[in-house]
Amino acid sequence: MKRLIATLTTATMGVALAICLTTPAAAELTKPQTLSEPPGPSSTRLIDFEEARVIPGIIPNTFILVVRGEKPYLNMRVELVPLRYVHRPDYWGIEVTGRLPGGIGLPVTTPYTASLPLDGILGYRGIEVIGATSSKRIDVPST
View 1 (cartoon, rainbow, N blue to C red):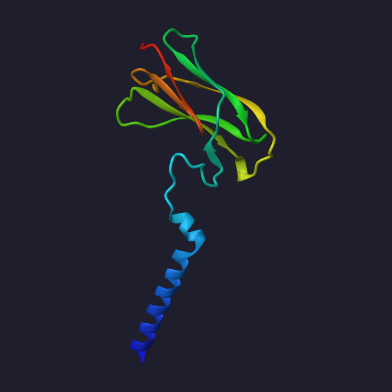
View 2 (spheres, rainbow, N blue to C red):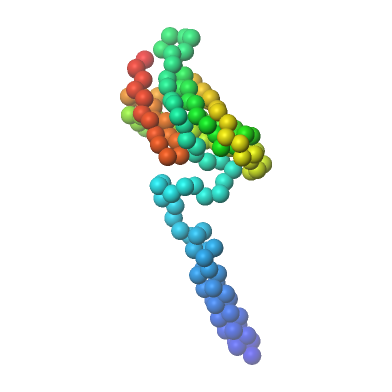
């Protein structure tokens, strides 16, 4: 009797698992996301930019990245986030990200400007600004 109950329980669990894995929601969760697809739900995501430029800092041989564009939500915080590398690349990637505090956004398109000092995050040739649908490489003179 115990063996029959164990077999039925194992079989029932297997059927339940098979049903869960074949539902559309589970298929979406297990589907790998490519870079060309829009990001899934998140409170932080890449956003587009209209202009990216590097300006010299006050101290000689220092530079500041300035990015401007329009954010889709009034209360979205735009941040420039440098990627991490094991070795210094030719172009250091810097992502333009938008973060919604609390995950709830007020859908009003608003202009933004964000800046980031480039001390310690320059590639051999410069930087690459990475947005949601485009990127831009900027050559920065070596120090």
